[in-house]
Image (tube, rainbow, N blue to C red; front, side, top):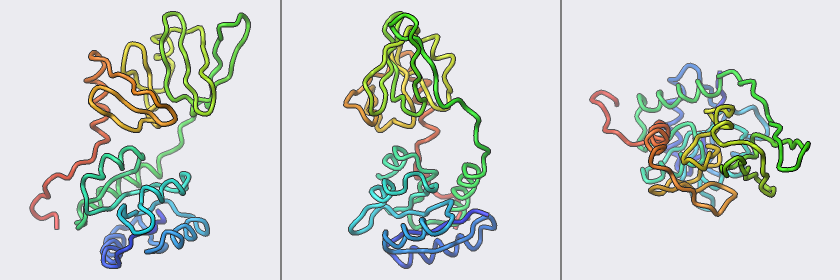
Length: 244
């Protein structure tokens, strides 16, 4: 059973979500709030797996509220404004629901959340050891701290969160073969980026968190990269007859 809560400043929106949750056998509503502080209290006092979160709220937006979560639960965004879909993608939410929310669309989002929440954790190494430019020196780099990797001939430069860049005696192609494709993607002959830090795609450039750099997307890598990203983009398709 997936424990969920609702945060929305509109009571009628909460009531509709409650009805949808009651009709979904694997969801259990633990609580609902119109106030972000009350929602945080629920999150801190109970085991919550999923949050249905409104974006447009007075005092604190849903996107601002997400910064307080620290990954405590998965999020499905709800809003009346479809232009927020890209922002939702940037924050790695499970799904994005456009109000008024019909049950068929709600159920698809709930199923997606169930898959994400119940998926077994992958056993992956949380660090790598690399040879530096100094003979005999190996350096430990945490996988989750790598923002992007820059190829420089026989060397690569690791750009790391909250740390100075690290030079290592590796080729970018050789390193690419050893990195998880779920987390890292090559966007240029000289750049591999970490997808969790992807903040914006603007034309032929990407912007990553914790850096002021706008990295280019190489022509020969663009199609594969954008195809992978299209799977994450949420659009509002016309409802099928009978959806409601």
